[in-house]
Structures are given as structure tokens and as C-alpha cells.
Image 1 (cartoon, rainbow, N blue to C red):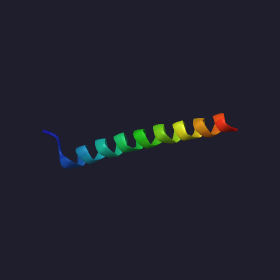
Image 2 (cartoon, rainbow, N blue to C red):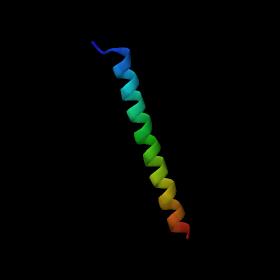
Image 3 (cartoon, rainbow, N blue to C red):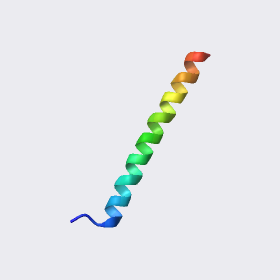
Image 4 (cartoon, helix red, strand yellow):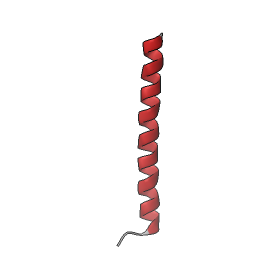
Length: 34
């Protein structure tokens, strides 16, 4: 049985992971254009 709080934490972790990946990609893209 998964509690709603656990689901919320999992969603937050997934969101931050995606956010960090996007940030890394954009930073790499900026470095390439320099």
C-alpha cells in the first residue's frame, strides 16, 4: 500500500531529476555556443 505522501515525494524526486537534466543540457548547449 502506497501512501499519498510517498507518491508526492516520488513525484518531487522525479521532477527535480528531470529539472536537473534539462539544466545540464541547457548549460552544455550554452558552453558549446561560446
